[in-house]
Every structure is written in structure tokens, then in C-alpha cells.
View (cartoon, one colour):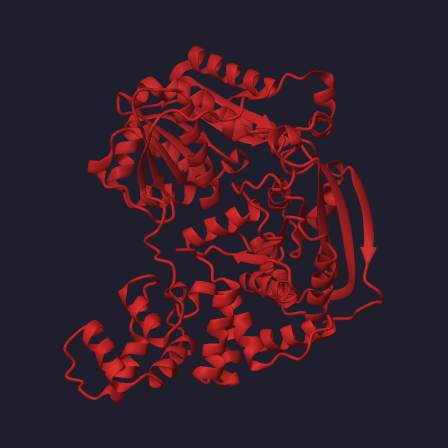
Length: 585
């Protein structure tokens, strides 16, 4: 079964809600969000559309929520389910109740059965969801996607499936990593640097798969530490591909040790453990038995985004490993972006990182041209795309409040409350939508929104204007998220909107445009975002990527926004501005 409603299914569902079941415009507005409904109405009218009618609101709601239309325990969602159940016959309600009541309640009147059915816990794709959807006559897709359809915690990877060849500089880096491993053994400490998009993950996986292969047979573990689920999944995909390519006789067991997953100790057989530092830290504190066993037989650790490794959580991990394994530990390798400017990943910061692990620095040996300007070298040799920067000045002025200034100091970035203020600004959203609609159809564009709701709102408005758009968040089920990303890569979507998930580990090399609707002061976050579009032709990407920064006048900001510190990334830069000056509080 497909996992997104088709246009026909959306139309049928909207017709059922409004014309068959007479769902009130008030309930539809609450489900969609009254403020968002009003803003959508205003923006769409500004773009030449007619005023939204109840059927239009229902359609937008279904386009936004898709198979999750009836999912959740919020009061308005339960009220929608109750409203639909009240329109069903008593016989149908009695049949549903007899099949799905959780306990013997003594209820015999259909009029009293509807409320407990409406409040029954909804499990997407399960029996109750399917029976409810069938009873009200909705297409089966609206029963939701079974969250059980997810990637396994443990998987066995068979050998052999050739990947693209390494570039010469990558092959050289891999060779040097292997030489260090062979020379220093368990005392290996190295930091590998490459420009964003240069293939750090691939090079490290190849070197350590070769090193670890005989050790896996002894029940040893390669521990890969990443910063997000996306980055963890990227590492797993690369490990899986490299293992298949090697033509090894046996399977490799991969353990997903992130997102709150548990590993049963009796399932431990050696292999690759991919985890987040947050989960490792929590499991150290709880003395998790599986983690103790893994550390006891660790063969190597790789730390992605290693510039974050100077933190108490890593200290706690290494201290516990020393208690279990002794002071020599095992090989430790950090991966980080090539230094190229002051601040994040500057040469000084990299030196500190190397010192933190008493590590050997491994970087490409590509001569003076590379040493002088790694980014320019990689662009000229088509490993990285040319970055065309558009600074789109809104003319809107904001002043950070005292409370927001306090939050900014604690969060070390623009506070979430201020981002919510931007997300609610109708004039700003109209400006954003107009600029995005000016992009040619068929331009794969990643949109970084101010909030989760903002991502879904922009997706709905763009879809209503006839452009294919989707949205993902941390709460999007894995199956849905993968399908949306797949459709984006296949150019079935012009726009993929997100908040906080498509920064590290997300791989869509044919991305042609990145739109930053959210400002940030974080150089790390900014570099991660623009890195999604910088893959060059030799790495399967594009020759050019446009980066659009929607810039506002923010008073009391202090240090500039991150984009102001990335001049060395741009091969072309110009400003655009809205017509007239807009004022906003």
C-alpha cells in the first residue's frame, strides 16, 4: 500500500468530512489551527486565490496531516472521531464496540459506546484504526502507517554490493588511516579532516571495516558515535554498503543503539554499534548491561562531528571505558570538517581537538593549492558544488525582548520563542512563499523552517499553489520520513520543508536550492544546513547550489548571524529585497 493519500483520496476525504459528515467549520479550524487557517486564507488571497471555504480548509488539513488525520489523543482529534461515530448507525457502533472494547464495562446502549470508542488509543495501521476508517468509508490510507514498519534495532548484513570508487585523495586518506592503525594498534588516536561533503564517513568506514573484520569474528565491536538519528542512519547505510562490497564470507551484525532503543545482552555477537553520545551517557549512568559488555569488547571507536567531543559526556564515556578495558583502550578516530575560517573548525580549534585525544592529524595531501584554500580546490575539481548565495532582505524589523535575550544566552542561538514569533508573522511568510514560488518548477529545494508547525504550514501553502511539497519533523514516523525523502530525491517533490531533522546525515546530492527561513547564530548548524547542497558532480551532486537566506533586521542581536561569517563558501553573492519597507513587532 502507498503511504501518502493520492489527489483523489484527498478529494474524497474532504468531501466526506464536509458534505457527508457535516464537520463544522469551527472544528475544522481548530484541527488546522485557527491562526494558521486565518494566515493561510490571507496569504492565498494575496496570491490571487479565492477565500477559503470549509471544503478548502478540509483539503488543506488532509494535505498537511495525510495518513495521520485521525491520529493522536488531542481533544479536537478525539472530537472529530466522536463526531464521525455519532453519524454511524447504532448497529455499526455496537459491532465496533464489541470488537474493540478494552474491558467489560457493562455498557449496553450504543449512545454510550461512542465516546469510549472515540477516546480509544489510536495505533496507526492497527486493527482499531483500520476498522474505524472502514466504518466511516474513508480510504484505507487514513488508518495511518503502522509505526511497527520501522528499521530494526539489530540487523545482519550480507556481503557484496559494489559502491562508487573512492576518489584518489580519499584512497590516499584511507591508506594513511590503515597505516596508522597497523603501526599504533590499540594506541591509535587520529583525527581525520575533510571539507564538508568530502566523504569523511565513507573513508573512515572503509579503513575501519578492513581493520575490524578479523576482530568482528572474535566478538569485538566497532562503536560509531553520531549526533542525530539521521547521522546514525547515514553511518549504518555506509557500513552496510562497504561490508557487502568486501566479499567477506560472514554477515556483519549492526546494532541501532539510539533513539531510546535497547539491545538485549543475549543478542550481542560482536559487530558495529551505532549510537548517539546522549544515549551512551545515559546508559553509563544507569549501568546498562549491554553497554558494559560492548565496552568490554570494544575494538575501536569513531566519533563523528568530533569537534563536539570536548565535553563531559565524552569524558564520562572514556573514563568508563578505561575502568573496564585498562588505560590503553582501543583505536579512537575523530571525524571533523576541514578548518577554513575563524571560529568553528578554525585551525586553532582543530589543534585543540587533536590535543584532546593526543591524536595524529590526517588530512588530504593535495599540495599548496589545497592547503591555501581547501574549499576552492574542491569546487574547482568538482568535488563540491559552487555556492550561489542570495541574501533576501525582508525589510522587517524585530527587537529581541529581555526574556528572549536571556534565552539566547542559555541556548547560544536565537531562542525558540523568537523563532515562533517569526513563524507567526504573516507578512514574512507571504514574502517567503512568493520568493519560493519564483523558483522554477522542478528545482529540488530544502526549506529550513522556524518551527515544526511552520514547516508544515509552508508545505501546505506551497501545495495549495500547485507545487508539490512535503514536510518532516522529528515526530514523523520513520517510514513516512523515508518515503518523503525518497520522493524528494526522485524529484517528485519540489520542496521538502523541515525543522531540526535534515541537518546532519541527510543525503540528497541533487539538491539545487536551500532556503533558510530560520535565522541562526550557530556556525555549526549553518554549515550543516548548507552542506546538504554542496555535493559536487564528482560525488553525484550538482555543479551549483543556491542558498537563500531570508534576512531580517534584528535589534539587540549582538554577534552577527551565521551567514555573515561564511563569505569564503560563496562563489557568487547578491542581495534581493522586498518592495517597500515592512514593519513588524
